[in-house]
Structures are given as structure tokens and as C-alpha cells.
Length: 439
Image (tube, rainbow, N blue to C red; front, top):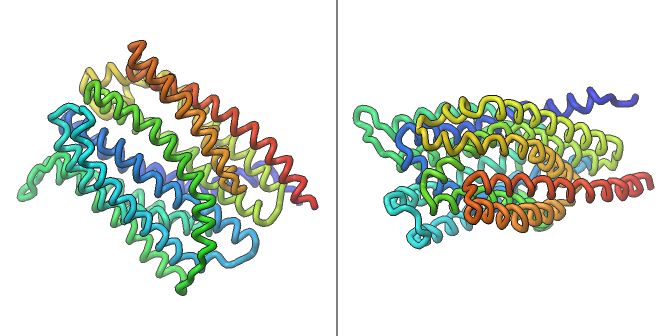
């Protein structure tokens, strides 16, 4: 029986909806940090904005490698082979990455003294980075097990854990940042301790769930690690390229004034909330396209790809309408600082159009993950963000005086270019796959 558009959309949403819930929860954890920090002081918000911009650039490399787990295991399942045996190898892989990442974050802390940030912000930046460096083990354990379960299309519990942690994080932030009774007011340090606690809770919650759900035996397969690196390295570098583009803005503007770093963090918090929906659909695309690729079903692969792209772009068009219509209201949810509001509101008009192309590129990235052709994502991101966005945005922002708006113009043009590159290469790969699967 021929499958309908409704069938493919429903299959994608069955996976994507719980992931959307979890992804929104994950971002709302970060939004909770921004909300509490902004209520505490603009300096606190500026400090964590700079600190997270730096640590995210380091930690994202490992997260990108871990993101290869679900498409690889989905392909294995599509080939009708056992994927459950890769449980312990997945955990070992993530913990090795966590050790490396922790040392890298710690090694970067002394460099803060030479980056010419406002002197009053430097101690808080360094303290926040020191504490969050050791939270990497919890964060990577959670990321790896979420990817593992996602490969089996088990997505409800992992994302319920994330939603629960939204409230846990806000509670801990309020208690530790402002203090209550015998608990002293810890400011920026309180935010770091809250993040540390929440990340380990999320990691161990999924670990106990997996151990209760399935029986696992210890297993070693060097080829699995090689595949994770082969597929994951381009994904990781592509995500890193994109993260550096976004977070370098906070670093560049933070050197001008801390309020600009705070503004960039606030804007990224807003945009990332909407981005979590197409990102979840992208994860679903990677799983379903990966399974179809392993099973050599071209029609399923093509239809999941097309319908997934339409869903991502359609949602982001709705999001763009909201951003254009209510910019002042959205910014004022996080801060009452009139200077911050004045900086952020005009930028949101550029951001709203950028989001449409951002939705398309993340859908394309999910397709490429599913067909295990991740190098093109890296190449497109490198060209778009490093060769266009950063230099062009820097020129507009600091040479032409557009400041934060200039950097977002750069991001907008980068998104257009990388979408064009990824679409052109996808048409080529689809023709090749059609011929290969028909043999």
C-alpha cells in the first residue's frame, strides 16, 4: 500500500514531539539561567553570557561527536542487526570525551585575564567556568544516553526528565543566586552550582532508566568508535563552526561592553527556544532517514526528507511572524533594563528572517546525518559562517558601526549561502542513492 504524506508526517512527529518537549526543556533550563541572572544584575547576566559563550564552544565539539550515535545505530537497526550491544561502548566514548573537554575548559580559564573584558566581570567569568567544567561528565552522559535511546525511537522518558529539570534548575537558581534562610546569596557561583547539579541529575536519571529497561552485556568493537569518529567528526566540527560564529559575537561585543554580550545571550535564548522545534524534527529526520538508508528504501528516504524540510521551514515562518510582531514584549520577559531592550528589539527583525533559513539548514543537516554524508554539512557551515558571517558581520558591526545588528546581518547571509550549498549537494546525492538502491 502506498504511504501518504500524512503517514510520513505522523511518523516524524511521533519521534519529534517528545524531543521538542525535551529540547524546549533543555533550552528553558538555559533560559532560566538568563532570567534569574538578569533579575540579579546586568553584570551577572554579562558574566555568564561570556563564560557560556566560551565553554559552549569547547563543550560543543564533544556533543557533536556524540550526536553521531543515533544515526549510526539507526542504520544498524535498518540493516536488521543488533544495536543494543553498543550501550557500554557509547558510555565509554562519551566519558573519554568528557575528560578531554574538562581539561580544555580548565586550561582556558587563565586566558580570560588577557581577553580585555571589563575588569569587574573577570572574577565571575572564571568562577563560573571552573565549576561548570566539571559538569561535563553529567552533560555528556545525558547526551550519549539520549542519543542511544533515540536510535530505538524511545524518546518520551528522556525528554520528561529534561522538562522536570527546567523546574529543578529554576528552583536551585533562585535559592543559590538570591539565598534563602541559611543559604547565602552566591550570585554567579550559584548559577554554576545549579547547572552542575542539574546536568548530573539528568545523566544519572537516563543511566538508571536504561539499566532498568534493557539487559546489557559488556561489548567491545573498535569499528564502532571508528564509525563514531568518521560520521561524528564532521558533525562535531560543523556544530563547532556554527557555535563559534554565534558565541564569538558575545565575545567580540563583550570586549566593547558587557551589555552587548548580555544582549547577544538574551537574543540567542529567544531564538534557540524556537529553533528547538526544527532541531527536534531534524533529529527525527536523521533517525527515519537513517533507518530507510540502512534498509535501502529510497521512496521512504526521499519522502521523510522532503516532508521534514517543509515542516521545519513552515514552523520557522510562524516563529518569524511572532518575532516581528512582538519584539518588545519578548525582550521584556527577560529584562527591564532599558539599555538592553533598546539594543535587542531592532535586532529581532533581522533575526526573524534569519530563522526561516536556519530551519531549512537544520532539516538538511538531519538528512545528511541519516545518509551518513556529514562532510558536506561541515563544508557548508565553514563557508557560510567562517568565510562569510564572521568577517562580514565584524566589518558591519565594528567598522560600519552597526554593532550587534551588523553581526546578525552576517549570520543571515551565511544561512542563505549554506542552504544553497547543502541543497545543491543533496540533489546530487539523491540521484546517486536512487541508482544505488535500484540495483
